[in-house]
Image 1: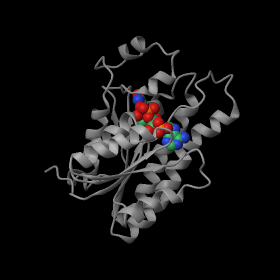
Image 2: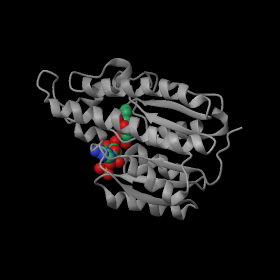
Image 3: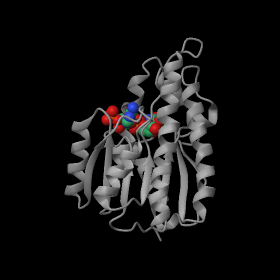
Image 4: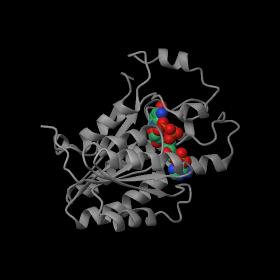
Length: 249
Ligand SMILES: NC(=O)c1ccc[n+]([C@@H]2O[C@H](COP(=O)([O-])OP(=O)(O)OC[C@H]3O[C@@H](n4cnc5c(N)ncnc54)[C@H](OP(=O)(O)O)[C@@H]3O)[C@@H](O)[C@H]2O)c1
């Protein structure tokens, strides 16, 4: 049976747009208390908050630039202060920073991409882990990318490598979490229809979609459904796994 506890306390990074926004709204429909994290896009984050409240959940927006990895524990602490704990952390915020050919990419883009897609989820998971451990368990879901499977393109190999590190972290954390009932899994989206792709104008999207066995992009809802499954009672015996939601790739 597919059951999601009412009142689940869920923090989603990068919930002001794209996949994260859809995940946040999906939890609103289950009466969750949702932390809508954002960086630049306050307006859309507040819209998501409004939407969740109108569908019966609780929600607040939390701002933080996840590139500043020197100071991330406050994000978890602020969420815990507001909702008196954390049951689910979804490390969704991510981007390919410096979409340049690997022969030309600058070291700062490499560092930023690794900080955003790997170091920030590591540090946020660690902080959330401490609270989950003391309160009988929780769930951590990392949003990776199908590029971790294929190694990315000539313009995104640094991003693919950061997501591969995130997948490895998933396995390590799942082992650390097992005795505390903290389940840790990863979802690997394929090509999903969000503004993520507006930042990569050089890509020929039609050719890319033709490589997908199902011959279409996925939707943010496709990923949100998988997140709901991984926080539901139907996944009580699943940890340390990577699930591709990618049209067959
Ligand atoms: N779309 C795809 O095809 C696809 C495929 C594979 C994997 N993914 C992964 O799925 C996740 C969500 O992607 P998406 O398509 O929804 O992307 P998106 O539409 O570009 O949204 C990205 C989100 O991440 C936040 N973010 C970006 N940089 C940040 C920073 N420095 N600090 C804090 N937050 C930051 C953004 O916040 P603000 O807008 O508020 O700044 C936004 O909420 C990412 O991890 C991405 O790598 C996406």
